[in-house]
Amino acid sequence: MNSDDHSRDAPDPPPAAMASMLIWIPPELIALFKAIIESYDNLATLRTEDPTQHHLRLYFAPESTLDVDGLIDSLAARFSIRRLDSPYRACTSTA
Image 1 (cartoon, rainbow, N blue to C red):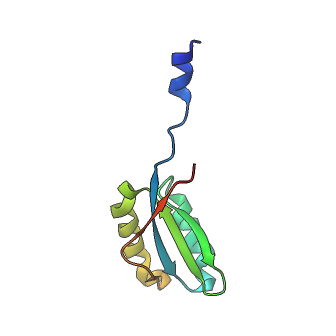
Image 2 (image 1 turned 180 degrees about the horizontal axis):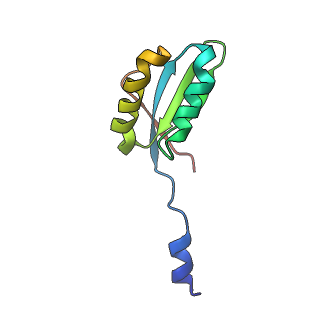
């Protein structure tokens, strides 16, 4: 295997910036919500931003914004989702 073959197997570098969305949902629904988000491969990552206030932050690639919006909109009533920032916060990579 030459070095050109090996470079094709290397993962793509991370994007320079990520979009994020801060949301609130009732604490009893967080585990189910996280499972649903994670079932969409590579769409978004969910992190707890403030556990005392049940604030969650979704991180996603800017090009996935419409997909994330659609998913959140479709789940909003079921999970009583409240968006806490609008529209989105850009996160620059430190890598």
